[in-house]
Image (cartoon, rainbow, N blue to C red; front, side, top):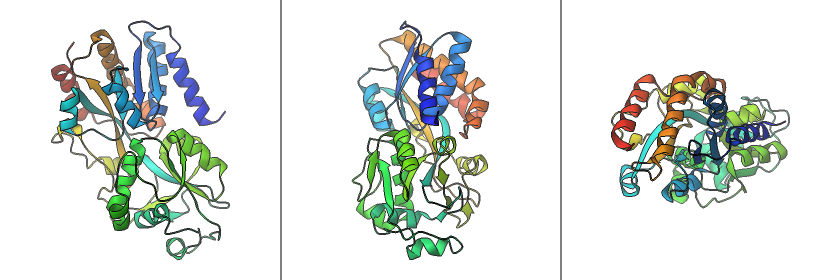
Length: 336
């Protein structure tokens, strides 16, 4: 059974409880779906309460919480303070992780191919069309690169993973910034669209000479070939929990309104350049306050008992100091 089916099964297991008031409903980002499923399974075993989480992408998750069809929304593209105020929402970071470029190249092992943000941007602009292009070869003098055309895979849905990926490309490739820019959905110059991290992972696994981008847990569990990256400091880094933590250590959560922090292209020799947080959105004054409080209990459980589970999937737990800030936000901003 591949990873995508496994986590879907875990999500269904967590949601299999009969519908009653204590059931928690959420929708949004596919980026944290592996860890939310794992937390949900453990929480159900401990409390008997289920989580029904729809892994449908950040854009759709934001729309669902705005429409009040779920108790919480989940997004990797945080909303700015003025939008939160307008919609009557509270936002906080739940966990951090990383986005990795993944390829399907014969004879290339995970971490062997090195890319830079500049080159990655040129591939997604369609300027670099073949794997043996001089710009890729210059970064990989010891690799035998095929002369085949690159199949570019990108998200087709509104996506927080895309938000962070295109934010990084905008910071590292001036042409990308001026022609495409960043957002949960952009006008892609080239590429084949796939829905969710699940869809991109599945497409890459089946398509020779393809390149895409996914949250690291999807790459690892689907045994996809990730690349190495040259970071802001000019160092070649591999996607490791230490590299993600190095980037995350720069986050200044205390002074960010609505916890609006973007973790791409962080300084430091050890930093992975496409690190990201994923966020929860809830209404300050929810119509169903019992469901709202039940959701808070789940998030509190995840913060208190979920760190090891997160690390097993190569996510980065929120620091204890930030969790204390978030708990104050719950008590001051969410009506019970």
